[in-house]
Amino acid sequence: QKEVEQDPGPLSVPEGAIVSLNCTYSNSAFQYFMWYRQYSRKGPELLMYTYSSGNKEDGRFTAQVDKSSKYISLFIRDSQPSDSATYLCAIEIQGGKLIFGQGTELSVKP
Amino acid sequence: EPEVTQTPSHQVTQMGQEVILRCVPISNHLYFYWYRQILGQKVEFLVSFYNNEISEKSEIFDDQFSVERPDGSNFTLKIRSTKLEDSAMYFCASSGDTYEQYFGPGTRLTVT
Image (tube, rainbow over all chains, first blue to last red; front, top):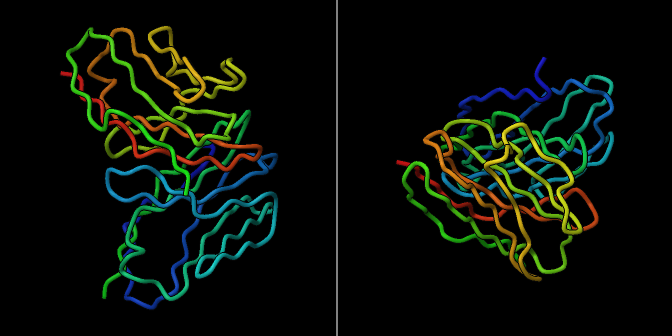
């Protein structure tokens, strides 16, 4: 079983929609979870950082961790065309080593 | 806002040549990392570095790779003898006292 799995999409939504992006992971010992946004041929940009379980909100973005299901989610409210990018989940597994999901390509249509 | 910078943005080299990719991490960060991303694939961890030592390295990071912090601001990745399969985007990242890693814009390495 892969350590982190993410549906690659692509996902296309109309402007203003609520977007739900998800990843599953294999090891219940993982504690640190991140979401990055990556535009084409650019570096990943840190969006959200969560420790352990629960929700974290920042503006239109909410990160959610369900450790019992080994499931992490990123919700984007009132999505905008500028949110069109690839969204990567990442999990810290040991000594700062991040394992990334495949990335979900999101397109928000005006 | 402080950011990680990388040079060059694009490097073209011939197979068998040595390349050095350079990074300037965020100034008060202590942990440094290199990742790579082959076109269309996942971002992959290569190595982490703290207190002038390698903390973790992946299977990819073999004897052809080395890292160095030659002064108080730069962090470098050297590939001794490049192969075609080393063609990728290479990202440097840094973090402070949490695991929040901030990535640079990347160096696109093309090996011909």
